[in-house]
Length: 262
Image (tube, rainbow, N blue to C red):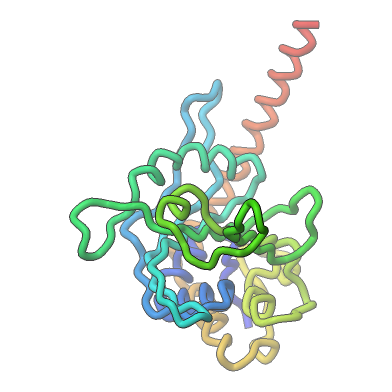
């Protein structure tokens, strides 16, 4: 079966706009039951213009408002922020760009003004980190008494608004080895399955997926025959090629400046 490659922003958006599939993917990654999930009315793709040569940033972002049932039975309202990046440097640029928005808070049902809500960030990285080779990395905070070392179970709104939990998914490390539910589901991102003559498509065997995950592959298979999606993937290729050319130009200019200063 051929499926559209979800490493492309247009395909990733198509995938996550299916609420049933988005709940399946996020609940599997978080290992928590999602009771309700709403895609917030915003997505972000920006061009940074404060550089010598304006270039498009290669981070795509979606926000979800979710109500989660924790393993303790407690229900929590959280914002799940998904970022997908093709290059390492862009994540840090993007975090700075979004800093002001976090401070403003998010709309909460029943509240007149936006308020801080716990944020869970999930990063889909199209590149490898410098040291870690894990396909899925979870960075979870814990509250501890600074004197006794005892873990504090109660959550404080003030602290929750300052920091947040993160999950990092390294797409290059998703391969044939599927050791848990997350790796089995995230195999739809496995770039080792790209068709040699067309990187827009992945060649997958539906039988490799558990029955409950096959709906994801089928949904992506449906994107293959949509002309608008295929056209947008071609545009993304052109943008990336232009970005790489401009980055090389910037690197060349920086090198000349360094040599001039010496």
